[in-house]
Amino acid sequence: MKCFIILLAVPFFLLPAALAQEAAADQSPADKLGWQLAIHVYTFRKFSLNEGIQKTSSLGLKYLSLSGSVNWNGKSPRVHTLSDQDLKSVHKLLKDAGIVKLVNVGIVPLPGDEAQSRQVFEFAKRAGTDVLVAEPEEAALDTVEKLAKEYNIKVAIHNHPKPSHYWNPDTVLKAVQGRSPLLGACADTGHWIRSGLDPVESIKKLEGRVICLHFKDLNEKKEGSRQHDVPWGTGVGKSKAIMAELKRQGFRGAFCVEYEYNWDNSVPEIAECVKFFNATCAELVRP
Image (cartoon, rainbow, N blue to C red; front, side, top):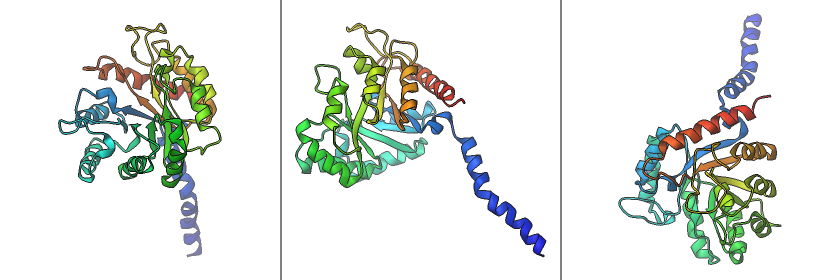
């Protein structure tokens, strides 16, 4: 009887280690890096939110980023004004499509008026996301930081091209200097190129403050109407070098596809982005 008990005990004590090894084997290269590949639903702005969710699912992706306004029931409400019932419907659409998480929401308004900004943080809490993307005025950052700490929700400052206020990463760094690590950057790599900046050097400047990305590759550096999104790794955006630098920094978070070209039929090109991302992640995790 004693021998029988000992034989049972051995696999019992080995079980946690065996399960951990099995879980590690099941992880994708992106999982091992702590990265999520998401669609920023603005990519499908010409379609309803439901259609955008279905397109995301068709690409095999499990993560979504909601825009500051959405195409919902034939209208375009600010996303943070959706009712509890509407949000419940959105969550059902996500679940049915196999989307497991809203990685962030934005660009949302975060003014210095605490009551107005609190409404947005409350929405984030109801939506189940822990990241808001915004371009708050610097005068509002005390309020934003206070609410970020209260709700334990990160605020990622997005950069539109110049002459917008945050076009240069130096401005973002100055704005968050000395503030909570809950405040950082949503790095829009394509807009940096449009502003004449090197995206790799910009990512290096933001080390430790990158919360998420609107990841892009563009066809050319020269500013003008011909400058547009192309599948990652085929343009001038230094996509692979940015990903390697983010691995070096120990970044963990979401790469959001915001593909702003071929609006009516961008899925084939986005599929190429997904293929590039997965292949590069696989390269980056090799010993």
